[in-house]
Image 1 (cartoon, protein in one colour):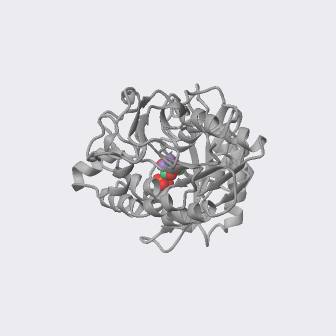
Image 2 (cartoon, rainbow, N blue to C red; image 1 turned 120 degrees about the horizontal axis):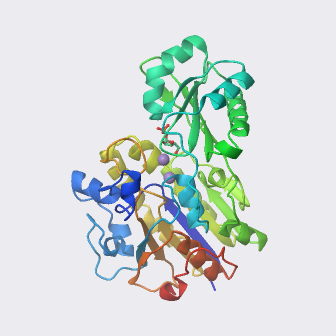
Image 3 (cartoon, rainbow, N blue to C red; image 1 turned 135 degrees about the horizontal axis):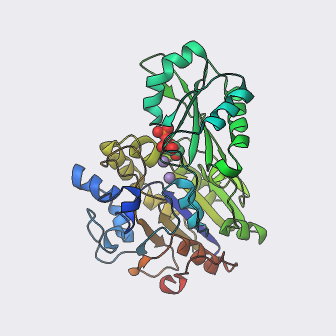
Length: 389
Ligand SMILES: O=P(O)(O)O[C@H]1O[C@H](CO)[C@@H](O)[C@H]1O
Ligand SMILES: [Mn+2]
Ligand SMILES: [Mn+2]
């Protein structure tokens, strides 16, 4: 009997382009493989012990002789490569319609309605890197007080403002207004408040970022677990990604190491169900910034905490370490990349050295969790439980 599943997302750690990567402009992307190619061996002994290097056709990571865990990889069915789509699919949803994106900026009627409701103009309105656009438009923003609106390849409308020009509460209010406008035909996955501080030439974003998300369109494994009276604990940005749906308790974190600390904290408590952690720094601090060295160091830093996580697992716990999409820091542009995700499974009851192969959907994870916790599945994905326990 399994008491808890720890679903541990290393945000953006893809392991190679998916067969349909061409549709996304991502042929040749390989987050882990290309970091290793560029930077030399990544020192990940603990993930390797679990079987990371034994995954079919993985590049840049050496195999381990007799891994302690089960291992494999999964393709994404949903037509997207963003965090929301990835996490929703892991939780048992297939999005048949991609979430709305705006590669040429938002339509005039949307911007005009936003300007009307907030009572000022907005500037920007194009896809951009968040750190670049505040350098580009920060001065104009400081002089005029106009919020900076931008997007990316993801389904997002982001609003950047200096904390001393637009107070945080007002920025959040503006985001709520944008959220109301961006429903229906323009239902982007997230409206994101992007506050920053500092002076011209040295602007920095603060941790007061806030996401205003859509509800998942269908029931997820989190909803099903919650309805059965189980605990569903969201650590990091999980609560935002699901707009609180199916979550019984949540804690936000300030960085990767804090995310590991909180996971260990909840492992020591008396709970039953799902502990769902997202470590976002890989994506936001290194992947989008195309910082290859930083990405490698962050991976090694996290790997060094794996033994501690393993030590805190109880006999009836299972940890699933995986990702939500790629974000190859060696690749063109600054966006996510359409990739396979790695899957590593470990626990006292998990068989050693089992290859679960290449799964057709991230939702196989949700189906497996359902079977492990003996709850209904969402009907999407195929369980690999019988292979691993
Ligand atoms: O460049 P920044 O603002 O960090 O944006 C990144 O963060 C957003 C949310 O994950 C995505 O749109 C991505 O492009
Ligand atoms: Mn992500
Ligand atoms: Mn991202």
